[in-house]
Length: 126
Image 1 (cartoon, rainbow, N blue to C red):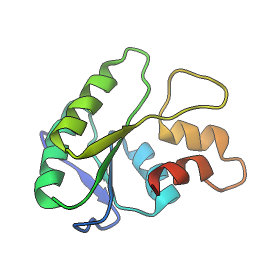
Image 2: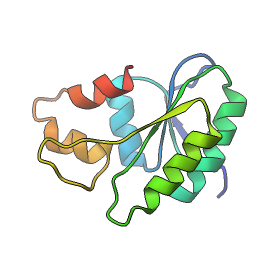
Image 3: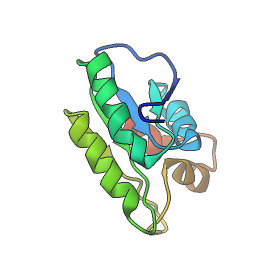
């Protein structure tokens, strides 16, 4: 599966791209920002996808939307993706309730009671 990916929205060179691991996170990011999102489907695949995105869209800033997982393995994969897709940034969700595990889909679900993904949208629109 190395390099396998799914786009939500249409990526265009020069416009920001968001790279995520899972589909639900990608859907939340796309809904929040309306920017192109690329789903890599597995942490171990993020580096391969970031390399491909950098090659296909060299003028597009890359934002890797990471997961806070209990075992910490995801962080290693996310950092590899940031390095491979440079210039790129890593964004991690921050929960108001202080939880230490979750992703941007969990953030949208937990904190978007009014139908507006404001915390997530603000992050992805920068």
